[in-house]
Image (tube, rainbow over all chains, first blue to last red; front, side):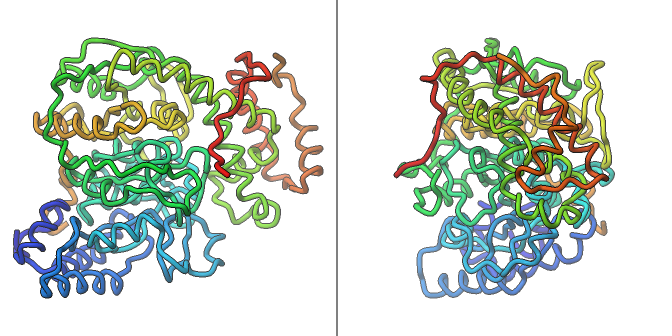
Length: 473
Length: 63
């Protein structure tokens, strides 16, 4: 790798190797990527803030460490960016809102950013999202929609839409998102990326603005399974600052990506997950099932009821978090979410408490599927990216609201807290589409092993969007 | 178990907004009621599961 190459398509692992070997300096990489971000970001509206000075300082520190002969971290010199709900010291954390602009700048980095920095990564900025993460499309009224690098007229997905757009456009090799009901997996599917929603409680969310604490996860989006694993491993570990973060030893997955699928029982999700979807979503599941020789079909019990409970928990908890502002500044909320927020704040307490009790019941029922299989293939989004502004979609004759139903297949799995890799399936349609690879709690290793296997087979691939990679664009 | 399918959401919004001090502007009212109606439909799915007084929520609080 040299700076004569176009760095937009170069992955995190390769950048880290090149920086460690002295082939390029971290500062040269950072300058090149920052210049591209500043020139090209307006096309996709992925960034809401570029942290140029910080990036150059972090990159410079990597180069100094190398010159001193110090051992470099696994992400040394790798540029990345984060959804703008993660605290970045010195910046006001927007969480996609206008209201939060009034807040004081963050006094410390979020735990995830601290850990990535310790691994040598270089933070280039904050990324667009749905207001308060309440959406699947990143059609943010305050900051404008993020645009899908594969087709600028279409949504990037959400709520981590800026994260997906930045990676798919080759502005950074990986980005952080959050996933409450599908907000990593939906944009990963629509922008053709790998995304990891780890087990609930695996990665610390401290310093990230909450949406629905009962359901919130953080995780990376990247263009290869190796880069996903690198970022994920760097963020693992307990954190007393997050009450949900599990007291578990780290379980690195990087060394397991080459293990293949021998001995794994792989099944295709049926029942709830066979409900109406577009041809491309069905084709993606079929292509992955064929490649993995997965013929068994299993039903995840109570998935539909789980989605219903997740919907209510989200509407009520997500709204009550903002009750003071809903009382005094309702006109300043994004009109796309305002009425939902107000309704959620007024909803009967019984709906919320019943949902929490149902959650435990559903967990106990659903976990039994892992007696029959080790990994489940399921659709990720019910279709490829809709056009910006789409209100309704029709799937196999059934008309439904577009925005909430992009998370139709992701919502039950985050409710269960199981780890999932979203994997982009090559060659099934003109626009990207992904599938979910779902494993039992704490088995992220299986999700990423199978993702890596599919990548080696050529079934999964996440190239930089052709339009974004084209010279002179 | 009863559900809230026949609720008068118009009256509910008036009562609840007063009770918790959350005014609902006229411009937002129809949207808010529409969302409550949608939530009430969804709530049928969670309320149709018979639970007993021994069915505990899955909390994560650790003292």
